[in-house]
Image (cartoon, rainbow, N blue to C red; front, side, top):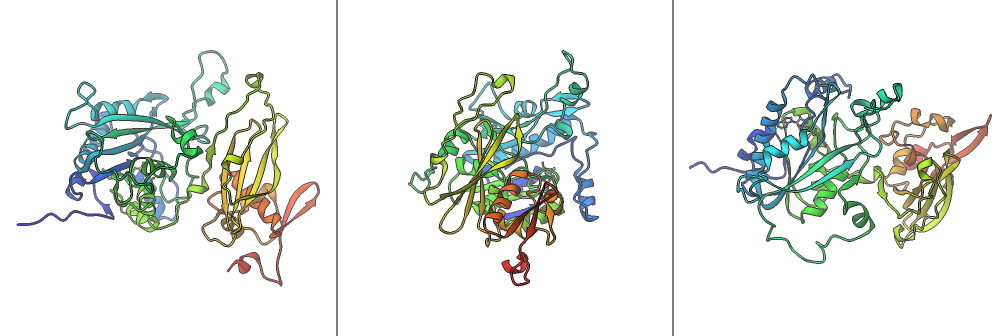
Amino acid sequence: MLVQKYRENEIILADARELAKYVKPNSVALTVTSPPYRNAIDYTQHVTNLKNSGNVWMRGTGEETTEAYLDTMQQIFEQVFKVTKEGGFCCIVIGDEVVNGKLIPLPSLLLSRLVNYENEDDPEKWRFRDMIIWHKVTSGRNGAGNRFGLFIQFPYPSYFRANIMHEYILVLQKGKARDDIVKTDEEKIPLNRIVKRELANSIWNIPPVPPRSVKHPVPFPEQIPWRLITLLTQKGDTILDPMNGSGQTTKVAYNMGRKYLGFDIKKEYVDEAKKRLKQVPKLSDYLIPVFYKESWSKNVQGGFFETTEVDLSPNIPKSYKFLFRTESDKSIKGQKGVYAYYKNQQSNYLCFVIGATGKHSRLNLGNVQDKGSMLHDVIIKLPKKQFIKAELNKVLETRIVENRQPVKACIDVLLHLNYVRLGDKEGQKQYYELTSKGKSLQQRLK
Ligand SMILES: C[S@@+](CC[C@H](N)C(=O)[O-])C[C@H]1O[C@@H](n2cnc3c(N)ncnc32)[C@H](O)[C@@H]1O
């Protein structure tokens, strides 16, 4: 008799509609996935562009009907159901779609296929456990999400449409609670500020992955699988992504000591996900907002900010000492933001960016010598010649260029450490790379 050999810790080139052939029934603790963006992206064209060495994605043609799309997704999530263990979860990251300016509520349509609202105990359907809104913080004002643009041209009543700044994370559960959770101190989730003020709520603030930093048109941020794996699984559990793309889920799962399984129908994405599997997670590249109770001025709605004193002490790890502070380059309505820097004994740097309203976020800059750190990332890409700060984003080919704050923070620390020097010519801030005995910075770091 032929015994079926199930797969584990693999990224597999296969159609997810057949995944139950490969995965042991009732074995997966958590699925984190995002279905294809039907109308927004043409994956085949993106893969062709990749082969021609351009990481440019193409807009989809939107030829597939909504019903056909939902049929495929239903088949995939029925397969996921079969392989999920009792009490296990399936988290689907999906947004409403805009077709010719009209909104299609894909998340609700998909939910109505997967959940039996009349009978919560239906043994063949998922239970609807939670709905989290992924607030994309910095995205939505450009591209397909921009709907307010028209209103700017016709700012009259009734022309308004909102920019789409969010997607949903549908949290589904199979059956009743798991009975195999180990309740040791090690598995306890620390109830720190981020958990209590951010993860606790139904809105998660996570900036998207900067464009073209990964060879996939629509990777979700590593924060998403990281948060869900932290909150819903324990060490040794199996994590699945049936539409794994660039492999954000499998990479984070591997790095968190979980077993992983990824599927995709495009060989190029399977290869890319395998390549990225063991890379260090880049969670700290993206801002983790730490919200603080703000004392808003009565005039906020009129557009005036008040300067808020922010007590950062609860957020600073004990081993870090305050170093110095700088101001943001630009001001908003006359108020400048503050950058506060901290360092520990291992020379790891931490920066808190505090906005004019008192909202602040944390940047883990790391150690200059540490190859995975933001500081190292910036320093090895600094131009050898004198450069003007305003042009830094052009000359720095780093994946964090899309975000000004980490670059400014790194430059501030490098100035502090005398790795770069500040000049001032014709009123413009200019920087010079300092050389040591004729050696460039890059050589000094090798
Ligand atoms: C939105 S992307 C996933 C991106 C992924 N979450 C990441 O972070 O990179 C959807 C992926 O589903 C894949 N896909 C589409 N249909 C599929 C199917 N039937 N089986 C497996 N993968 C499929 C596409 O090739 C694409 O890479």
